[in-house]
Amino acid sequence: MDSERRRQKRRRFTYYMPVLDANTLQIVGHLSDISPLGIRLDSERPLPVNTNYKLRLDLTPEMANKTSMIFNGRSKWCAMDKLSPNSYNVGFEVNINSRDDAEIFQRMYENYSSDRVW
Image 1: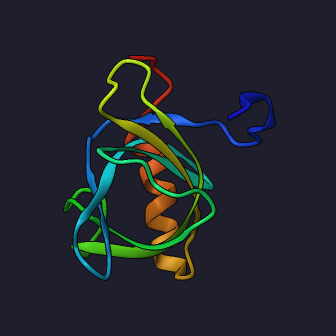
Image 2: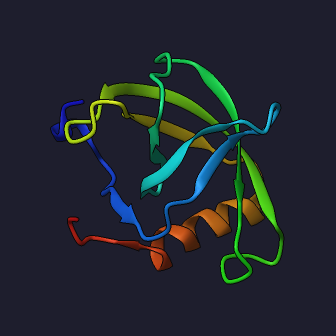
């Protein structure tokens, strides 16, 4: 993905949280980066691009007063991880319909992510 096209700053997420398929409860990947409009997952398998997903993120009590949130995600790109050839990085554009969930997502970006490069 051409980083010059990015309008929103992506930040490393400080927790390596699993993101599930909300329908099957299977792990899609682990949250590694977050921006106000999207996420990047580390996945054990490549995911098809331009595919819609219903995603579930289990939340910690520090993040929210509920245990999980479900939101829509559309895969925008997928690439083999440069450091781990058995892993894939997948970028998702997120669409959060609930105002409460949008506030949680924003709080996650502001409080649980870092500009620090690992």
